Length: 197
Length: 197
DNA sequence: CGCTAAATAGACAGGTCTGTCTACCTTAAG
DNA sequence: CTTAAGGTAGACAGACCTGTCTATTTAGCG
Image (spheres, each protein chain N blue to C red):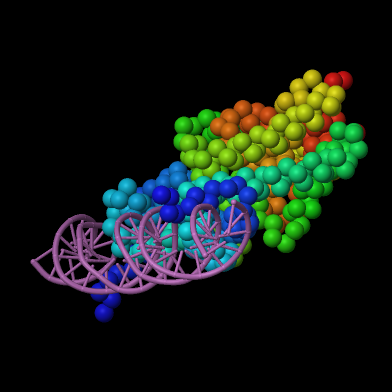
């Protein structure tokens, strides 16, 4: 029995290569626009290897997004810990990091926002994965806002979140990395204005 | 000669029905996810009628977005002219209108942002159509910002734009219409803080 | 060596997609 | 009545899509 095997280990070089390749191509052209065969050809991996690791294309997308979320989380923690303890400095560092991202040659917007755009059904696993990831950023912004002198840190954090997402949209739509600095100035102004007088 | 006809008139009931149906379905499920046949079945129109009016699916998408842009522009002008002449009132009216939109049962984010997400290639006609439409909003915000007491109306207008786009993203991702009011308060705070002291 | 798990190539089914073509119908104007 | 434009139905080509299956090969390991 069990002639064909499971290959369900979470640690596998082929699996990781598939996730990296899949994310890169999805990010370049979109989720529906990129077919399985394109990813397999680019990665040089057989089709059955993919379907041994993932049940479906949707599952591959979710895993690729999850992998990307881990990368982002690590980078963000590095950015924050490189800045001083001053919450305003940390806010500045966050938006400066956005600017660096916007200037990378293959910047193509936010993979998560674009995933929501293609999978707007809230019941979709892709949609759920995106919301989960976005919530982490919002939580981090909220804990940052709590270090600021405001009586409504939650609202302030959300407003900063709106500026951050808006900056990504603008940078992507108009290829305008300067959106990061405008968002940063806006965020700092809101943080200062929110001070209880 | 010319046994088959052109049917290229810009005013045609079938053409308009196609555009309305196409936009509704694209907005519901996405551009790649909705096929021509689905639109034709929903509209009750023959395939050749579509291809007599539009050269390709891409051209249909562009036309549907253009039609939607006209609607939005009219609605926005109505919103602005219903408010007082005070630019802060006009700003408030804009974000209140956003809230109303977010609360509509079939709200599904911004059709233009989602189009950019699916057609990230700047050379794509869809991408170009979206940028053109978004620029109109930015120009309107800029002319509004010029009525405010600030020495950098362009930056202020862009920051308000970031809040507006961010609010749409948040409202769509988390089904949170309250994003509109947060964005509005943020925009008003920025407008007041930008006053030359 | 021998066993096992992982990966491979490639064919394949079944469906969907865009776009084209033909032949026919309806309607309205001259 | 005649003519022409717009619309219709349906078949069709050709490409692409996801997912499955089989038979074979490779690689690690006791």
